[in-house]
Length: 194
Image (cartoon, rainbow, N blue to C red; front, side):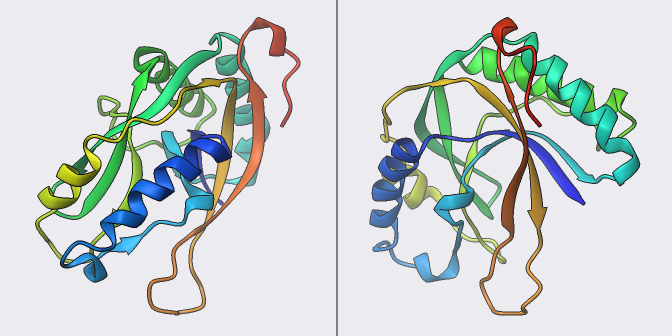
C-alpha cells in the first residue's frame, strides 16, 4: 500500500483555507489546475511510497516512538508558494521547527523499519492545494494566497495515511486518503493508537 506520514489540519483550519482557495478559482487559467480535495489536505512529513504488509508492525511501532518523543506544538496555515511551475501550496507558521523535527523523526522511523525511502531532502512544510499537468505561471496564485493567515491550532497527533490512487479513469479524479494510524504526540501519549 502507498503510505505517508502526515499532520492533518483540523476541520476549521481547512475551512478557512478553503474560503481563500475558492477565490483563486476566479483567476484567469484556474481551469488548467487540478484542485486538491479539502478532505485530503495534509502536511506530508515523510512519503514512503509502496510499503509491504510485513513492514507495517515495525513501521507502526517506530512511528509511535517518534510521536512519543515529540511534544505537541502550535501550527497555522500561512502564506503560499509553488514548486516549479506545476504545484501550488499553502505554507505553515508557528511551530515550523517542531514540524520539521517530526518530519525528520517520521522519515527515520520509516527507514529503520525497512521502508525504501527516496533520497533524503530538507523538509519544506507545505499543503498542496493545486497541481498542473503542464507548466504554467503560478505567480498570480501565490500572490493572491500569499497573505493568507489561518487561525492556529495545537498539533497533537502523527498520522499514517494510505493514498488510494484513482482507478475510475474519470478526468481530474485525485487520490483518496485514508488514515490508517494515529499516534498522540508527547510522553502522555506513549500508549499510542494505530
